[in-house]
Image 1 (cartoon, rainbow, N blue to C red):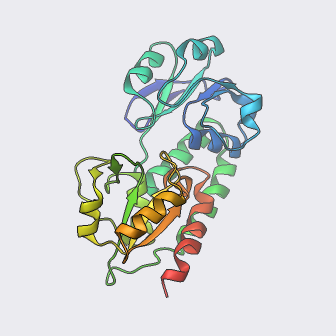
Image 2: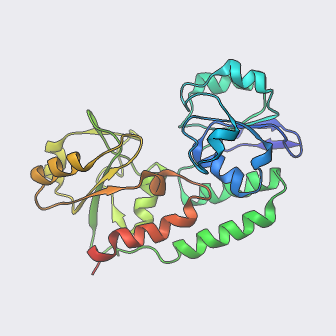
Image 3: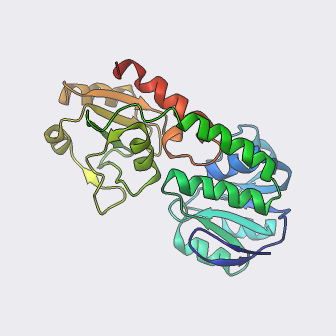
Length: 264
């Protein structure tokens, strides 16, 4: 069958792939939850959900440092990639030998479109319908903050240098879904560098320190609390903000619990 991925690329793919290599953790989890675990032959070192999968599937390196030779040995009939999480050079190299679907998920709507498209390819539409309904039901409880209150939240994904997120990212879209105002919303860079001095000038109500890709710890929380005494500094689960796919089933409830005590 012919499939158009989220970059607008036309791919010739088996009607129902039987040897799938997933090189994006959130997409691996989605495949499993759609009932495609048996068809997965290769995953990355960062595909941690479900945990047992790492012991039963061939691991083919990191998302940006793939072992192309090992992937070739697996002889996949479908590779599931992402524009942002994988490198362009490696995607192009794989595309010369295998059909590679590249997702480009920046919004809630993009995520739902992606789930629908993959479920249609894998003949798992009924499972996808239930999954999407559960996601939609959860996100109907949002936003938690209204526009009139304008609650600023700086979200950090990296340390040394400090890096935040723009509005043109899935994380930025999740902040908007919660009802938070992102000071870096209009930044041209998807992941703009910043400094503690710049954040001090912004004076955000919240500073959100993500668990991934940089694993912020309590040590950094204390450092930021000293530098930003009027800001609530929170360690947050990066998967809930950045993993599109079936992980979104848990995201809305996580957001509600995270901010409930601060939204009274």
